Amino acid sequence: MSDVQLKTVNDVLRLVGARGAQTAMLWQDAAGGWGTISCEDLYGRVRALADVLHEWGVGMGDRVVILSENRWEWVVADFAVLAIGAVDVPLYATNSPEQVGYMVRDSGAKVAIVSSAEQRAKLAESGVLPALEHVAVMNDGEEGTDVSLAKILAGARPGRDAAFDAMLDEARSQDLCTIIYTSGTTGEPKGVELTHGNLAVNVTEAIAPLGISGKDRYIEFLPLSHVYARHLDYAAMMHGTVVAHLARFDLLPSAMMAVKPTMFVGVPRVFEKIRQSVEVKSAESPFKKRILAWAVATGRKHRAEILEGKRPGSLAWKLADKLVYSKIQEAFGGCVQTFISGSAALGTDTAGWFADVGIRIFEGYGLTETSPVVSVNYPYAYRMGSIGRALASVQVRLAEDGELEVKGPSVFRGYWKKPKETAEVFTEDGWFKTGDIGSIDADGYLSITDRKKEILKTSGGKMIAPQPIESRLKSQALVGAAAVVGDKHKFISVLISPNPAALKAWAKANGLPGTELQDLVGDRRVVAEYQRIVDEVNQGLAHFETLKRIKVVGDEGTIETGELTSTMKLKRRVVEKRYAAEIGEFYKDEATSRE
Image (cartoon, rainbow, N blue to C red):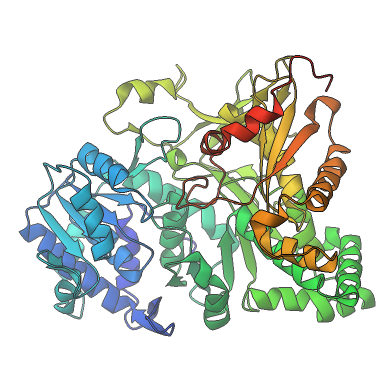
């Protein structure tokens, strides 16, 4: 299927529908078991919902909100909306009623498809929604006075339908496909307008070189409301890969054992947590700790071979593989052949560690506005520490200040109803300003330093990128999260939240009383250990980049409480607001400090 060229997203559904009884998706029931949905069943259910949307008067260009966790009904809703020429507006299940209300009103959505009574309540609590006419609820029995999506889909008819296929073909590449709202951490959310053509060209081009097929299985645990996950879903279905949708991240370990994926797609925080879990477990005994250290050191000698896609043949590597590397692979289900990371910088410490245990991670880069992939590493073109080369259809260049600028058919057409904001992110000659500071080497490999707005500027005029420093800190098993602060101050400092399991194990090994996290973070011995970690990281930094003061806090923050984005990236401004008092302590004597 690698030679198939999508013209619209509807082409994906046509490909799926042609596969008949072949399995399209796996779904998890309330008891944790897994069921299958065939390609013909998926096609039929999409057609059934599309018919009802038509009956409700939803037509070309009308907006339909999808407010749900990951589940197979999400995919049905997405395809059904696009099939009739409408535009879907995916919202995060973690959005607050206020956020939901703003985006439903701003988009002018006529219909909302929600997962549960809990999500339905957000609509009720979000104020007046003047354009909203119909609500469908996925959970049967929770619809109340609204429509049951389960009952709609129960009327699905088997077999292909020529009239429905003809309607799919009516979509044009320039038609608006979706409006995806950005997180809005620095202002009100902006709706990114992506056309069918934006997504189709990106999906066609980005994944094909990885060689996935109908023999592959893939777990979608990143939220489908994010363009990264949705793009991967389209790509997987285009190539016949079986997709298992997971509603919650905490279900991932058991899902990997059950599904045994052959492709694993994550974000840096997921890989960091898996590494930390391995290191915490190894610390249970001196023997396990020595074995892991030996295996990683052995793997480091063979890193170049792993990064070239080769399997080392030395006796030491084979022994390390049997004792350690294979056990780490088993944590992913034991069958993964392709590992992908995106959404934020993976960091060379994390990428290198995984290479040293036999796992090559293909790191890529993109934004919602670029549909999303700009660049990615491939088996034939791989450079660790980079985000790969730009796709063939994408042009890249650097502005004078190092900001990466992008041009190509996958770049969005604008922000919904925001012409001023749209104009601000394009150059006079039509290049999209990504907001990321980067570099391009002589071989065309891209690297990203940090978000332009995240760069800290000390009062002495020094520019510091916090993300690489934070990545180094998070490579330590004891560090759960780190936030470097100090913009406009004389020096930079850091807030550190522990990895709870690692800290409790360390406390026990060092004879500290108590196991409550809030008590441990205030213990002088714990603080001294984190200071030791910071001192070690400081040794590899320029003097002006070194972290002068630290504060260990007891809460890592979550997506739900707002400190992390849906793809587990730090929301620095939210963290700075929450810990304003602690940050104030860092700088209360700044005027007289010699640091």
